[in-house]
Image (cartoon, rainbow, N blue to C red):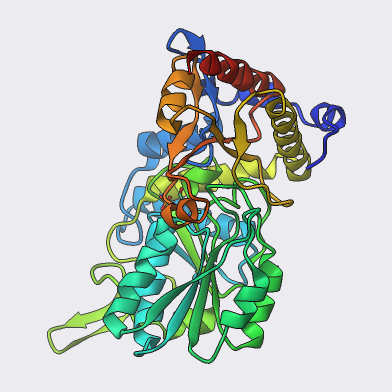
Length: 414
Ligand code: PLP
């Protein structure tokens, strides 16, 4: 975070970028839309919308199966998108990139295969105290089946993970550590390299939930040395319903299959079935081909963005928001980690978050309110929920001002 905003704005023209996002040009409740719910889902540039439309218009067909031209073209587009993901996260091989419906399904896959096949009674899975429910409940399901336990990693007052407590919790019973790269509810960016090194020193593999990281920063799974990395296309300007699980080859090869069906087999007979090689053994059924193509297009689109400049721009938006927050009576920030993405989670004295959200919506400002699928974290801060404004690279300083002008109006109603 830097308070100086002028240089970043000059280097990164969010205003021009917005022209590629047709949805942002509309009015909501008679006011220009100010879309600040990017942590829930990002909007899609024309390049992504067109890639999906032209897939259906020109090459729609099932993949890997047809002895015809359309199927070949669909297969090339689908597998080409896998190659794009492979480069995007710097996976050592395309076989380690598994298509899923999104982060939730990726984590469930690991919980149902990797965790269930290894967990024994008394074992522990350490899970971030800031975790999204989709990085808690799958582990609880796996633990319950084995008589194992899910243990939360404590959270500091400024919404960081307490690494001293983490070091104490890491022990002989720990079978896995699961944490988010970036917190959805408060924006905290965890020192994941350090956490992974600590876990590995204790012989424990780590799953990173990258849902909130991929839209804000480049990700290199080899540099991170994570064992698994899960993310969703829709949080990084791609479509909904498509996501990725990356895993280290040694783990993926040792994991039993999850869902059974077509695509994931080598041969089937009633005497027994041989499963396909990676990545197909974890991809039963007809995949979301258009989704993969759309995600490939989002990756290509992102490749044309100066990501360092985008990050500086987002940081400047957050700094600007924090500056304006100082002048808003009754504003209380929840989650003030020194290293965070542009997420402003807050309360407004005297206003229930849901009411504040509704009043903002009436002024065209879209934010998220509630527990943000992180109820344990809300409990940690003693609040039922917050108001969350989450920024993306296409947001502008005028929109930050619009948010605060709207909040001042909300205050006058309270
Ligand atoms: N993890 C985090 C940190 C998230 O923010 C989200 C969605 O908000 C998820 C997991 C779940 O992602 P999806 O609903 O795309 O599976």
